[in-house]
Length: 291
Image (cartoon, rainbow, N blue to C red; front, top):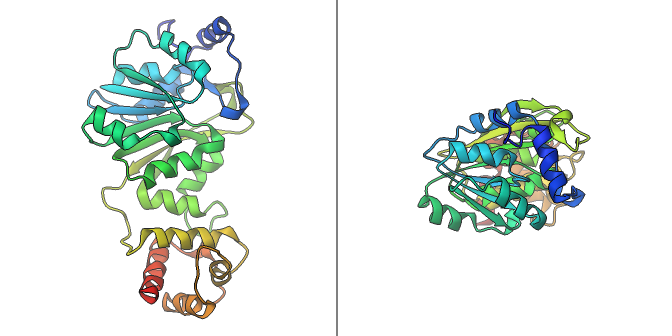
């Protein structure tokens, strides 16, 4: 790679010192400084010249450079206004990038996809700030934005949680939600020394390929997710008690108990033992009792 690439730590340091940039803990900033990993993320995201890519948290533009070279067009959304002049310089030679100084949770991504990609599915690539990983990923899925795939660097334990199944201690509401919308696959683990500053935890890149058709059919998606959240809010409780104690589920306990029996489960079953398919079936049983 030529010297201009920011995935070279010397070049990263030069940019940081030129602008007197100070890392902001509140934004969870950790810049990648390993060119092989940056290249592999772009490769695993399957970015081609036909793609419009949304990058969340470009930082100083380390991965953005490679995305611009491989994609048709890139929109880079950065919340830290101090990084905007840096990005304008580091990406100045690329004509296919739009820098947006905004909180990704407030961006109308559907409108962006409509304007930049004629509403066709987009690819999302990001080195996500760990404190806000789940709201960003769930926001992308729940808003039903046209997305083909999401390839993101996240905390290793969060990646494990997204990929795991029933019976594991990592299995929870995030596992079920991600697997309802997409097929998750961890494509690499990334040690702390690949970042500046070094995070205190291991990281992983996970690729979430959106299902063309959701793996389970359910009459009321919102109700199913209420049941999932309620059953994992108090992991040590039985499924019946978890649902009964939830402010989101306003049902008499006998109705909840009968629904669990109809599912073919005993009174002592816990939420962590249920598959996505079983949560969908339980949701439909409860839906029929409500309507």
